[in-house]
Length: 383
Length: 161
Image (cartoon, rainbow over all chains, first blue to last red; front, side, top):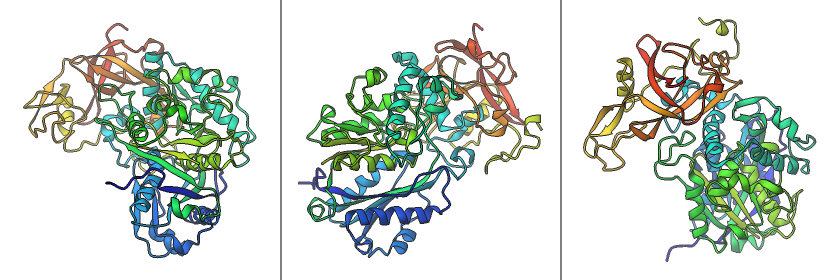
């Protein structure tokens, strides 16, 4: 019988640097600080680390990190692709490596000076999953433009409005206002601010777009058995999934039967198939929010509601504390920090430890998702 | 050089030329651009099972044949969605805002939706149509515009402006 992933491993340490629009340290320094912070949180010496996982877009490689933190002999290292689609996959790859005996102490991390650095879409030579010859000559230049195209169609087809996207932005901002580590800690958002803000790509406005942040985060994955001896209460990886749907085209998913059905559906089906729990058992969700419009799509894809019901799901304070599904309780990419979604993983761990600044009472299960609209990944965590 | 480019220092690392980004064809996509330069909108189609596919790729996901033909489209379609980009943008495009970028569903192959711009007349700029005239479902027909010598892209005209 195949080795089972369910509850076989746990996240036992989380670490992060401060978040800011600009930090003076290098990405390599930030990576090392976040990783050492996570190992200290776990109570595991860096010399015991034997596995690493990060994103293909991560600029600091395993060699640099391992020699700087004084890791031991490393027997597993992996990188997940597609930008923010890879966030949860880093933990999933470590969980698989630990569960199958390829390694014992895994570190996943992301360090990024997105606030200081150039905007990635400015590099017109960068290779995209789908060749840019079909989009960029027409001025479809940025992820915001590519997702806005799907967002307008979603609004047209399912009756979603800007108020629905505002519900997402507001829930994230309200949680950030409770989180001293969040970039938007002291900056409330109002409906008037949202409705009168400048456009980025109509129908998406400034507040539909994530922050641009410098910062780094990391977490530590070990076996469930080892986790019982660590400093903190273990947070188990109950289920994990990646998703690349048939005939999917990345953020320009324009050339199949239903462009609005994205990777969340594929990852969601696999996630629940291998879980003892279903969407109705989820106490709190950390859903990737590079753009507000991705959240209604993800709510549908991960099965919290039916096709086309994601926008309506956000009504009546559903995403706020005390609502049906408290969302992005540290503020998410929209209002805490945008570090390719790794902050969503760490916040999921805090919720299940009971240490969030916006704690959901007795939270025992948390869904964490990576970017919708690109080949993606997801984790179902439990305490 | 367009006036908006003069004196700008806002160039990203890849923004090398003072004008629109030109399509950089790969092996699979090259025929599309060669036909466009002749004023023909053609889509890669499996020579065996006749299934059209886009973007072009080496083999047919339906029957795995490596033999393809380029099938001429009528040039008619409907707007499936559209956006109006605003700054920050690459400098050339920032000077055109608000321009439109539309996704046009081809009448002959509904799963194929081409990214493009709706313009007021053949050769007109991408900011030549009042955005208020754009709507999802609006019928359009193709026209062609030479962006640079030998480089031609399809553009779209509203059937009922």
